[in-house]
Image 1 (tube, rainbow, N blue to C red):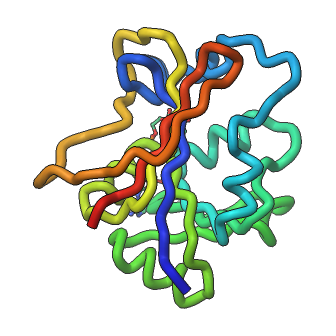
Image 2 (image 1 turned 180 degrees about the horizontal axis):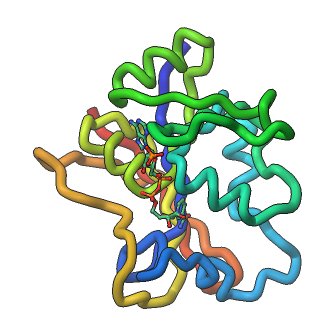
Length: 179
Ligand SMILES: NC(=O)c1ccc[n+]([C@@H]2O[C@H](COP(=O)([O-])OP(=O)(O)OC[C@H]3O[C@@H](n4cnc5c(N)ncnc54)[C@H](OP(=O)(O)O)[C@@H]3O)[C@@H](O)[C@H]2O)c1
């Protein structure tokens, strides 16, 4: 089974994934009357599991409403000890180095992974473990916040695979790591 780590994330024009105070309301700044999912459903079909940081998990739980993931979710945290009882069959906790985390997820039979969360994505990129970037750009300048990308030891080259325009405003670009 081919292992693959996919980032699927929305960012501002100036490259932030959340605002200065962690705000995410700008993600919905373009009216989406028909609730088009911009590739999220297709991603869920492709992957075996989701890997996300604790902040992202708490944000999603805080949204309330229906649990959005149809695949198992691995939450990375050193501080969380318990998963809410309604999510216990859908969510597991993991901690450690990116390599040991991946090893443990692969051992459980999950190979195609959706990697989510600011520092989580950056820690995977630092180890050159991201195979695909699907980046949705919202046309707004936030002027500060949490950046999608951080420093790397050396450049990583990607091949552009596709571009999609949603709602006549939102561009989604997909890139595959050239190895
Ligand atoms: N625009 C978007 O599409 C999008 C998507 C996702 C997130 N966001 C936002 O991006 C912002 C920044 O995200 P973030 O960096 O705070 O989020 P994150 O990556 O979701 O969570 C960071 C936390 O994950 C845990 N963690 C990460 N790697 C770990 C490891 N190897 N072992 C154990 N624990 C590990 C740590 O939790 P502990 O402190 O518990 O140890 C760490 O504090 C947030 O405001 C988030 O809501 C935006």
